[in-house]
Length: 248
Image (cartoon, rainbow, N blue to C red; front, side):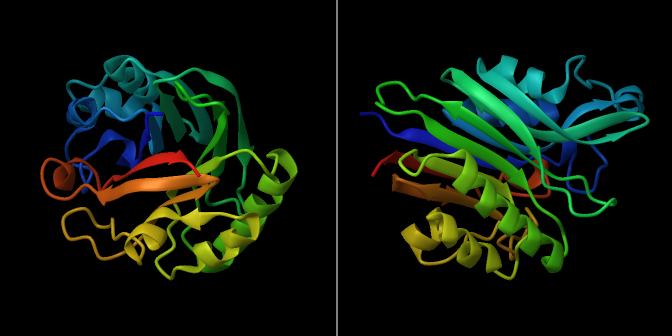
């Protein structure tokens, strides 16, 4: 049975860390080289009329469709925040068919529109579908605690206990509280389990904060890595996390 190679990445709406340069084309090239089976993306720009006029080379397609075409993946997009000139959200790109999906609103205030994108997909050669959840959580700890509880409740209600789960994304959790809360749903953090500590992924040029996470249930970690250095340090304000997984 072949491991499932996954990546989670906050792509910063396809812009460089300080929003000066368009990077979505370079992100696409880097991801083509990486060739993940399953990709969890946050801050995906579905539409931005202002930046499309300002930046030469802005893709005609929404970023999730553009990246999916470059990788030859299936894609679903969960819109989180809409505004006058566009919208952004989470996206899941998969080498394998996505059986079904839904986008759950986990916003807890009117200033931060957040969501978790839930997909069911079946890796080639596996005997059971996997629940893939892509999340982007709030900046304030008190808001995130409400979102942890929301996630635990949703997983218990919507996903059968025997279904393997991957929950990945930008948790904005530099204090490390998420892992304790999500254990209530049977989830273990991949880097904490495999390497003994959360992975530092922000800021990309000198990562000191462990904001990004990969949580699993019913799966075994074969490898886990933070992608440091070039080109990743100049493509976004976050670094990608990768892992190879097999059924437990």
